[in-house]
Length: 295
Image 1: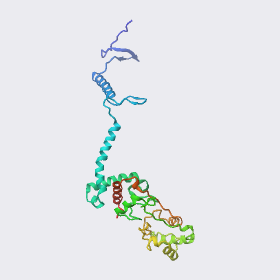
Image 2: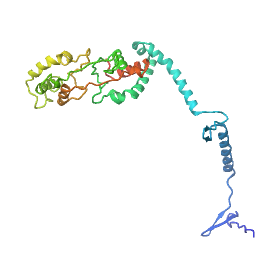
Image 3: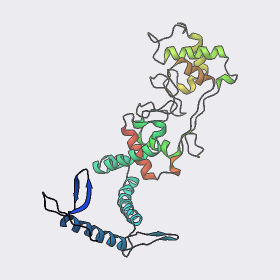
C-alpha cells in the first residue's frame, strides 16, 4: 500500500514520515545555490583529476594531461634564483673587500649570504651572533689569536686551524704537565697568570694566591713569554692567545689556567674551502667582521 503523505500543519510542507517525540521531519529540498556549487565542485575535481597528476599505481602515477610536476616547478624556480644569485656572487668573488664595502647594495647582499652561511656552518660551534661557546672563540669579542682583519679572517675560514690542510694555521702549546714543569711550578705559573693578567690582581684575587708571585713570573718568562708575550699580550704569529684579557677560550677560572698549562686543549677548525665556494667564504668573512670584533 502506498505510504500516506503527510503535511506539516504549520509550514504546509510534506514530511518524511519520521517522527521523534512529536517532532516530524520535513522533506525540505536543498537550496538550488548549494546544489549548483556542489555540482560545480564535482566538475572541478574531475578536471583536476584529468589535467594534473592524480592516481598512483605500482610503477608510477598518472601524470595528467598537462604533465605538470610540482617538483619540476620548484627545481626551475630554484635554478632561476641560483642564476640570479650567481651573477652577484661572481662579483663578490672578483672584487676586493674594499670594493665590496664601497657598494652598499653588494655589501648588503654579501652580509645576508654570509649570515645564512654562518648559521648553517659556523653557528653550532661559535654560537648565534658569534657569541662563542666554551672551547670555541667568541668572534664578536675581538680576542683574535690569528688576527681580525678581513683578509686574516678569510684566511682562517678558508684553510682552518690544525685542519690538516697544507695552508692551515697551526700552533701547539707544550704539555707542561708531562715533565716540563712540576705540579708545584704549574701552580706558581697559574698564580702569576691569574693575579697579573686575568684582571684579578685586586678585589677579584682568590685568598690562596700569594702576594709574591716572583717565582711564577720567572717561570712564565722562561717558558711562556716567548709565545704569549712578556705582558701577556699574545702572539698572533704563532696563534698564542692574549692572556691579559677578560675573554679566555677555555674559561676564566684559576682551575682552567692550571688545566691548560698541564694538559692543553688545542681545538680544530675545518678548512671550509672544501665545502664553501670562494664568494661564500668572502661573504662569511664580511659577516664575521661585522659582528663587532673585526679590526
